[in-house]
Amino acid sequence: MTLPDLRLLLAAQGVSTAGTGFSVIALSFYLSRHGPVVISLVVLAEFVPSILLAGTFGKLVDRYPNRRLVVVGLLGQAAATVLLIAAVENYHLVLPLALIVGAGGALAQPAVHALLPRISGETNATKAYSHSATVTVAAGLTGQILGGVALTAMGIKVALLVDALSFFVAAGLMAAIATDRRPGESTSPDGAPGQRPRSGWATLLRHRLLAASVLLNAVSVGTVLLINVSNVFFVTQTLRGDSRLLAALSVSWGIGLVAGARLAGTARLGPRIPAAMWGATLLLGCAVAGAGLIAKTVPVLLLWFVGGAATGTVGVASRALIRQHVEDSKRGRVFAAASAAVSTVSVAAIITGGQLVQAVGPRLANLGIGTGTVIVAGLLGLVILVRRQRSGGPDNTELPASRSPHDDRKTGALR
Image 1 (tube, rainbow, N blue to C red):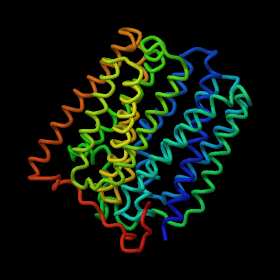
Image 2 (image 1 turned 45 degrees about the horizontal axis):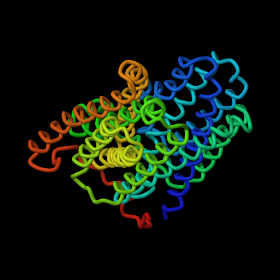
Image 3 (image 1 turned 180 degrees about the vertical axis):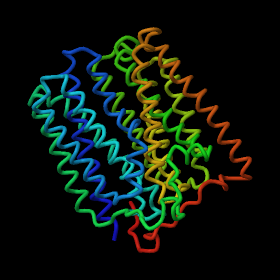
């Protein structure tokens, strides 16, 4: 019976994500006294380990029991956060500790993505990814809302303590899970004795449709980060709103994201996953560009819902596509490489977002961001179309999805 394990994993994700959202908002406000550069460096610390250590962490996920790796990652994040409580007043120490927190997340994320199909069963994996995305979004929004209040009510050290406790609780929940993904060690991860395992990057580059789909997800995340930079200026300068409107836009986007994730989890996309990702990314670009073009409060709220739904669809579909077309023995490396691609685009978005808004203003920035997303998605869509035509149909030549040894057991229906 895997449903109890799935509930434990989702609970662990929810607790740790809420704790992170709780502390990130409080920490950002607290460090604002040191200027935007310090805040930017702390934010970038979340992504840098995923880029630099993708190869190493991917190999670990395809070699060692995944549940154990997730617990190790969470405990590392907890320990670093505890040290942050003592070091938060010295921002020179905050950055290396933030890097450790980011490294723990970079190890845990591909392990969770590879472990989920073992818990849910391969046939229910897409629904499981949908549930995971839903819990993550809801917990993140809740944590961020509470984190803004916590700094005033309790102080930064209490906020960090809550975050540290959330990591410890999440590690305990993961340790209680019975199901595990234990990659075989008798043969190489690629299935042939003595054969050198192919890296996640090599696997993606060898299969263009899969690579294009991963890049679509990276573009989607990059678009979100770019508009996050411009959002506060778009609200205050263009829409003439205040913090309440900014919160309303965040809630609208979050509700849309949950709806999109749920839709991707329940729709029977099958071989149409790449096309669905392409269409959703185009829709995201149109929504952002439309917000810049119309610049009216009510339409923007609706467009933000649409953009959130598109983002949720792309995120869940991307994980489902990797699960569908990558053998189980290779998934850790491919998930890690996909995460590194997203992180690379995220870093570029964070670095350039402020400069773009400063150069052209928030309204033109949103128009340009949306238009750029549509153009890039269109080009990647051509790659998907060409690949499908050459294969004579829906992606027949991609990697064969492996049959998990857990597929034959009875698994409860995911609801």
